[in-house]
Length: 214
Ligand code: G3P
Figure (cartoon, rainbow, N blue to C red):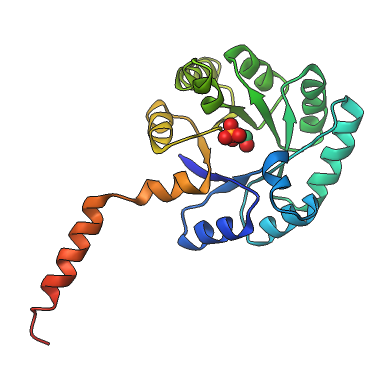
């Protein structure tokens, strides 16, 4: 499974990129608003690190506006994926952008039928928001299971990008189902490598190593 960071922070991205575990980055208007920098500059800088997949979201709500923004964003770098919302206008824009060769990440997906439509218009990624579903008492992981099953049934090439990830169990469950990608906050990615027994084991090895004659 590919692991993406859900952030617009260059510091966070650089850290995980340097460790060597990062496959891509997703951003959204909320994450971008925290950085205090121009949107396109942020996207350009992330791409310049060499990250092969960088999702940048349109904020227009009409088809023509989405097309204009999407076409401008994709010019920034070949790694850019354009994020369009799951609305009727977003579906139309996705269909046109996909036909032009732009890879679209269909975002704000909360049902399997929405994912079916995202595939129909040629989205490269579909982004079910599982944490937000959990927050309101629905099982986000069950949605991922449904989408993966449906896409397998019809050999759909759209990749399932699990978004709104809150903790490592979300990542584990998504991987067990066979989702293609999980995008997560920095704090969750940090936790993927952490285990207290690893720390205890390393401390013990280093202490014992001191007894070895040098
Ligand atoms: O970027 C889309 C999604 O991952 C947002 O997550 O935590 O705001 O629900 P969250």
